[in-house]
Length: 193
Image (cartoon, rainbow, N blue to C red; front, side, top):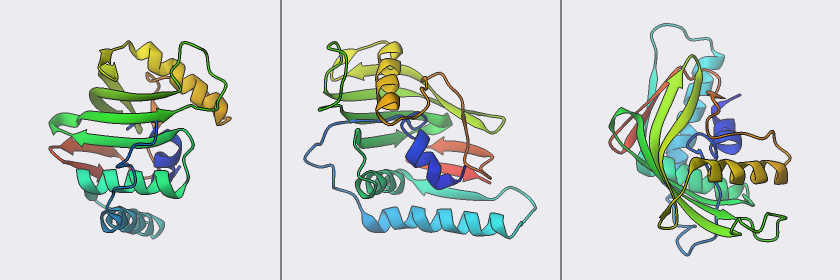
């Protein structure tokens, strides 16, 4: 799995990572130059890996703004049907907060699931032995605290809609090929490869 695949398959679950939503007025607001910085960083990393460069770990630092612009760019260009927005706030020691907008209108969903919803989450990104997961500590639907099992139900529905393997928020996911570790700090993420 390469770095680009992370944001198409598993971002809903890891950064999550997460992900799904409704259309909001500012959703198209992102910086193409900031998104392009991430695309160039990915290309640089992939080129170095394809040349088989060895040695000490290398790193790529991506700012919060660049990461959010990249995610918005991917959502728009890939015409994401369910996840319309994913915004992340990065903090020290792999702490992450985020907002996910979900749009399940027009889909067969249970009556207890709202077709449009905004989820807010907070947790810690855990990385271990080439895998990662987001350990969610706080989860809100609009302004109401909810249990993570609700998010699992939403992920289950989204997985079925997209004909993907059903996943859980507690699952560990393979890091993109070559990525050894991820560390967040205030407003930035460092990817080690």
